[in-house]
Length: 367
Image 1 (tube, rainbow, N blue to C red):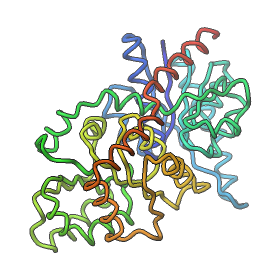
Image 2: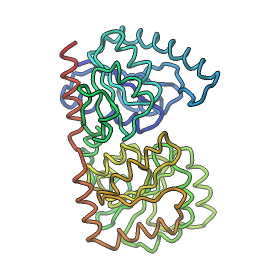
Image 3: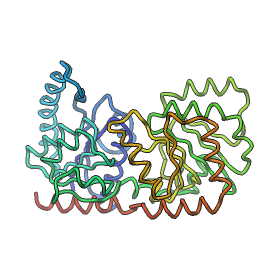
Image 4: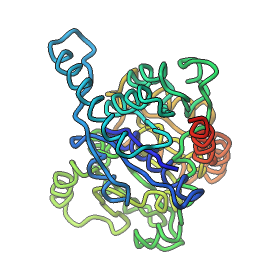
């Protein structure tokens, strides 16, 4: 099977695409891949770390208000479609997979115009503009949440879950602890603000970081995000010697291993994160980003909260003290933690990537 992957901007679009590639490779070791993204997106950094060849087109997003910039964007789209067609003709894929973000628009559209089977994957409850546009021409639409089915054409839309759920099932807790240097006797609290980090979460953690030392049986893994790491490191240094039960990292590339060892997750409510914690049954404290389209992260998070799998703190109510209270309640109430773990597992879809690959095989066979 020859597969083109496209999607970008944030890890929430990129990691599902890479998870699909790894599942295809597990089932078909001789499969070939090409990733088409943007030079300006995070995919330009993450994909080259894999063995998947990377090519790029130039594209940007439409403004939600009338703007002259939108005319430039439309011109970029036309040019990007033309560039994508050339790449697709050269690679000759059996199927093209789009996982969201502006860049997948021209690539999936170009594939549909060339008669190449396509599948788009929507990670969030409320779909983005790109996937709503592409759903008209895509061969199949896969969604992470059952609530998303109503937004897409009936008959071509399937509820698969998020492929990152399958990816984390291959994580190794022992390897995760080894990477962090944490022995098996300690609980791990992972604080992670998404692929680019989150300033509000960083500020809350900074305000209580010296208090974390009192939790002797717990190790805190604080992931700042690359763009925030230097500033956070300076501010932490100004506080003097930090407690020994804290690891401060800019980014984690082996997240499945680290998550497999995690007792509690504190973080944003991106769809990939929720797929991961439900597949593994990790109780979570979610701080949805208020800066995303249609406030979709809070809608994602509230679903877990209603099910009893997570606690939600909206960003405007986030303080270090509130965060510490929530963490402490889960650390000290084993029965509550067990209940949340079971509720999270009940929502998990660990075979999501397998279902998506089965769908890819189905649509590519009709080529």
